[in-house]
Image (tube, rainbow, N blue to C red; front, side):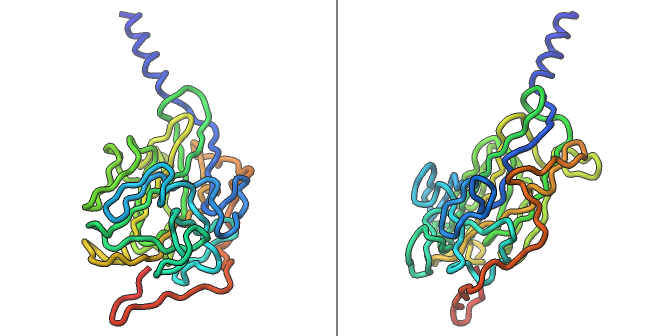
Length: 290
């Protein structure tokens, strides 16, 4: 009996870890050192790992997947909330410089996407990998809280370490192997929302995420809907992108701030880094939509 009990205790503790440090939480629009990447270049840390565009799934390295691109000052949409001193808007590969097409992958933000369902809908899944170190292995049992400030065009859903990489069907249903969303938002291009990712309600925290020792993943699934709900008959290109910051300035383990080093920098204020910005054309009689 003692031996069996001892083995059971060992099996349980071997699959539990205690976190002591977190690294690799980069803002969007950064280079590999955490500085601002040039507009039109690829983000060094955020990847678009999956896209469902016009009824077709894309993964790996394809037209709409791969390293995200940093929006250029020449093409960023005027309705978007400003970049910050340390973070920039990014978009999926394949994004073009104009609604009529233009040039792909030089910092434009026009991508397919109309409605939330049907063959003209489009979803882009952005992923950031980060590392948690500590003792033990498997699921982390001590309290971690990670703050994020996020904006997206048009809507977003955040997942932490989903059981399977997010995929989307023609009805707009996101599948993650049963993992619930940690946060979501709609009409999110002109304002930011602060969210928290955590594994415990201790100290006023939230419990919406599961972390583990080793590599962890944050996925942000961005829907490009052109502000239309349901199925749309339009196949036009529309602006789409993602902005994430303050990830590094709000990390705590057991209530204690994680020291900010290297690329993880605090955001002091949101700064408008762009001079000239394009204004989108409105369709006669239609709403102004991103």
